Length: 368
Image 1 (cartoon, rainbow, N blue to C red):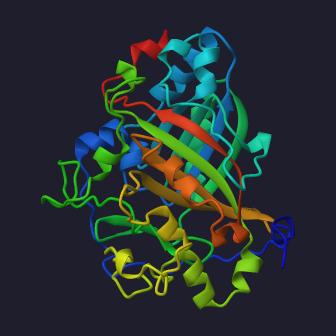
Image 2: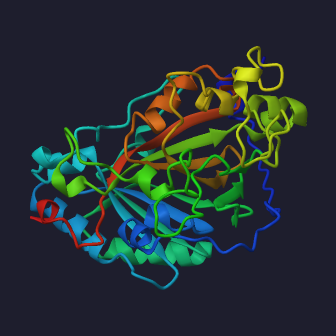
Image 3: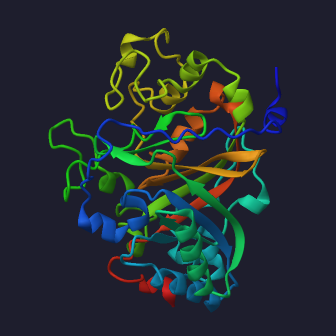
């Protein structure tokens, strides 16, 4: 068997930039209030992104750096941007009492091999645009607005086949699989929910926003917990596997269709497959959302961006927004421990951040 570290020395790039979804020209319906409040989370993701984690000086300079970046965020012009806060920022700004209780440094999960140079950060600048050059130029412009901030790490990502289908934004990752079918749908404009009904799924706005409660300061209500994971892919090892093996590792066909034939946007009855005959019990999607009593469906909005830094460093920039980390990313990640997909992936960086709702201006509690 090939060891994990050996696998990641093999490298190799596979980019499948083919179309996904028959109704790729569909115009998505997005609630204006949602997009205004959390544009980096609730607008359709741009085809290219630059994620930049920053370290800032302690004291009032930390608050000034945040304010400068947040004020530079555009209202239009085809560029999406968001400035999220890391747990360490609050200590440096002398505002530890204002930190949401759930915002902590990202813990090390089973199988993670974090590189300090790619992990955490006081601030996270997320800039998306239609082209890689536009994203790069916009990111550089924002960084110049806060000269006291120092780049801790930066990754550029792209979304092959980035388009909308069935109210969901889809893309194809470097393993050749379509992603995004499991996200909440944007079909119901202005409601924050999917199509109405007693059994309707929560919509994106409902999933990503933080609600008032214990440990949540008033300024944080309406914002979102942003998780970033830098996940390296062993593409050569993956490409050597037959497609049927790949599909059983993931738990879906390459086009998103479920292994039991359920359409991509549907939900298979795992209760009718208790032994994993159709969908293995340890398949990625089944571990993530097993549908068993007492295990709620994940409440998060996921964004996957491919990245390629060289033949031995390529993979996914996994981004997820959620109102509750335990009901979103953290709970899912613990269920995924030991899944077969771990043989082909290695998380080497990322962090936990908090994206404030700045639609009503910058929170006074954070700007001094």
